Image 1 (spheres, rainbow, N blue to C red):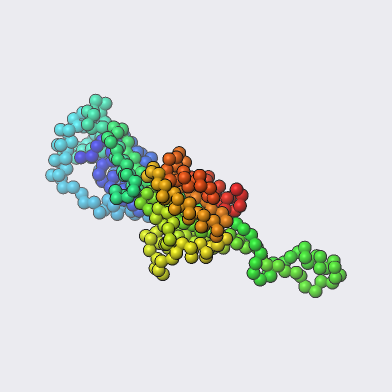
Image 2: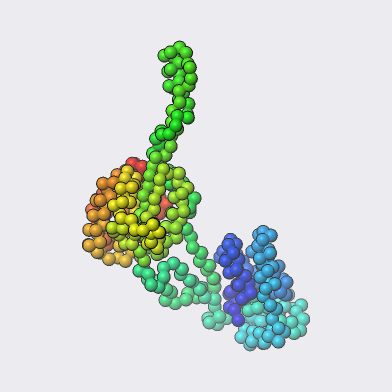
Length: 378
């Protein structure tokens, strides 16, 4: 039997099915369903429950068909089972059942007809505390075997609402693509296909006769970018962002953009895949830097601040890498997903004090600042 503060099992299963199919329903839609059931809507029959779901959650023909298929796939309970549920419901919630029988919708119910599901009953004012709805909050993100502890609730808060937690993108792919396009270094190169109006007029004035217009190469973006991303266990909560970053680079209209992965700190080898494998064999860090000489370097890593530890050896090795990278990349920006207040007393603090790198928090405002630094606006 479901709690009167929650949707009944049939509608709760439908709600989760809609979420799984990408239907944009959220907390407000869920609570609308609970309020409608408490008000007596959808409590008469299975068809009325279907109509309620269609009214609240279906906004297109495809969503209506999805709701219809769900109700068709769920078998109708046997009459004997319904009678047993009615008996247990009346025994458990006598006050709520009495209120329902005295309501206008309950007065017209024929004798022996089944009561609505428990999720449709109003909560009595003197209901015992154990019947109060509880919030079931699930945390999705880091794994149990990762470097960060998985958050747990010490106790379930006694509130009369359910919360549906959906993952939110740190920065959308579209916004990332727009930021990459801000990283521009215009240079004329290629065939002469654009009319040079000033030179054409000067030629006409100097010779008095213009045999043919003067053309020049078109402007193109010559900005190049090398991104080094940390995929160690402590960076697991930001894996979705790294995936979005990889997808958005191809829409940035850069002259070249290369993404390589490492674990904890860039050592001798860098990897082409997030699982730290290379289909074409291992590639040394020096070879990657030489190939991207003159490009801007963007590093995405917590630099040890996620664990909250100070590892001087790691800080020294990171500083040595930055000194080597500065020979090939004139501008280096480090994006740290941890808040700046968490850097103090960790390896990240030693990396920032070493100089030669701009370390910024990972959020839209500071990512825009990072692009400006890569462009040369320090």
